[in-house]
Image: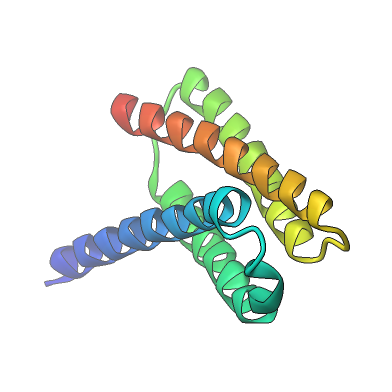
Length: 130
């Protein structure tokens, strides 16, 4: 019974991590390339979603990091790069919502979107070698 609960928790945390990453990076792409004008009015409604996805990523990421054992230095090198990119995406996404001008918001959202894509590529690679 305990093993099945542990496996269920692992699956739920993985799902939360992937879903949060997809929402955050997809939201940044949508914000930058699709909904440039209508986003100004929806900024306050997007704020809880942004911080919710970041909280989901941090919580599930810490759990997944704690559950991962026995990796090589090469794996951890890429993991640290991934974590630094994640911090950049979090900061850029938060600053995009707080931007004063439309050009500043677009630049920050674009930066978060591109870094998020690189982050997802590194995550896929780490999942493959894990």
